[in-house]
Length: 347
Ligand code: 5AD
Image (cartoon, rainbow, N blue to C red; front, top):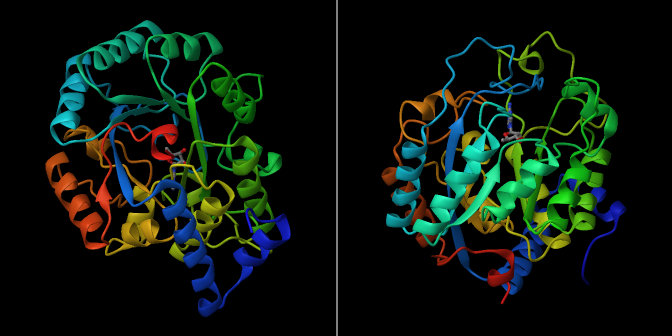
């Protein structure tokens, strides 16, 4: 019984009964085991810059905020990559706000050095960038690109992502382009964005399947009080509003596993933030097979505050590594070796 229809996805999203939901989680867990096994891949996250030209209504890094901004140096980034190797990670993710101060050739050079000095897979997550830049970085050796489309509903998308200049963004088109030029492609959404309905979220999950994504990141929307969407005065609660709860995130991860059986699905830091005790474990038990430990060094780690109260911010990379490995072991799972790309993990 592969896949799920739109009405089935919707029904599960609206299902309140925990006994019924156990069936969904069990099916997602079995699908995960069959298609990607018990390995949990570790992707070290390096938050290389918190500069951003965008004004996304939910994000703590939005350009309008007067916060301390940083860019890591090339040497600092390479140091983190070397640490990733020492900690046994297979991948580093270079993430930043949409920062055009990160010159395309500079990024390309950083990618080249990481690829030539280490066995790491390199994932880029640098926002909506120009086709030529994406091509340059792919040629420099970048393996994957992550760009969440956040919501497949055009009106909600437009409401929370003010235009920059005159050109509307086309993240779906960008994802297709990335695939064409040879990246493994990741996307994802936030669960519980004010104005997001179950109907919309069901469409998001369907779109993950249609795009045949290699990775899907799913986390709860977390209100940041210094952003328009986190302002208590902003009306939210649409009819059929998706709550930004752990349960809704877990349902979304589970449904995504069934729709994209071979995809890499992280148990995200945002999920760990709404349930610091065992949110990560719940993510791995509902279809997840990836953790993304933060490698960003202090003090930058504290400055990459996309939402407040972010889990793991007060730890360092060694502590995160230790904690996550313990959590994986306690579930009877093991840490994956090698880059953990969709191809190798599905063999
Ligand atoms: N709550 C939860 N997730 C957020 N992100 C940005 N702001 C928030 C927030 N307030 C997520 C977006 C983005 C990713 C890097 O972080 O989905 O794609």
